[in-house]
Image (cartoon, rainbow, N blue to C red; front, side, top):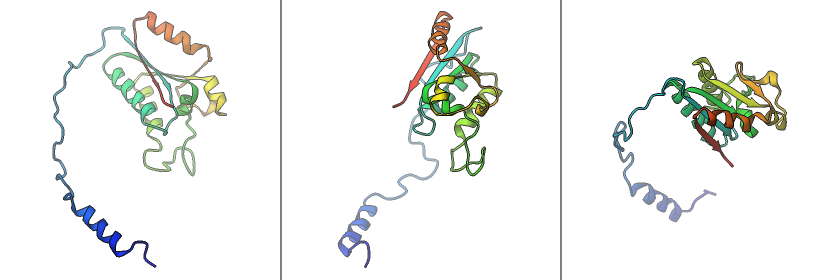
Length: 174
C-alpha cells in the first residue's frame, strides 16, 4: 500500500510548484553589504575576555563565541576564552568517532579546530576544573595549550579583566 493517496500526492505536487525553485540562481546577492561601524582595532594592551557556559554542538552559541574571540585576537586584543560549567566539554581533545580526532559527522571537529587555531594564533584558553569534573573529563583530555583553572577563578577572572578595562563577552545557552 502506498504511503500517500492520490489526493495527498496531488497536494504535494501543487505545494512544490507554487514557488519556482530555485527562486534565485546561485551567487545571487540577497543582502546588502554596507558595514555600519568602523573596523576597530585594539589599542595597545587592550584585553578581551569571553566566558563560555554552553554545551558544544547543542547550539551555535559556543562556536560563535570562539569565532568572535578569534576575530578579537586578530584585531590585536589580548584575548582569552574561559570555558566553565558545561562549556568545559569544548576543551576535550578526545572528541571523535570511531577514534579520537576522527570526524564522525560534518562539523564534529569544528569547535576543537577553532580552539586549536585560537591557541596557535596566540590566544589564551582557560578551562574550569569543576566544569570538567561535573562531566567526568580529565585534565589529560584537554586540548594541548588549554590551562585548567580552579572553580573560584571564574569570578576572579571577571574582576581581573574588568579592572583592566577589558571587553567582556559572556555567552550562556540553556
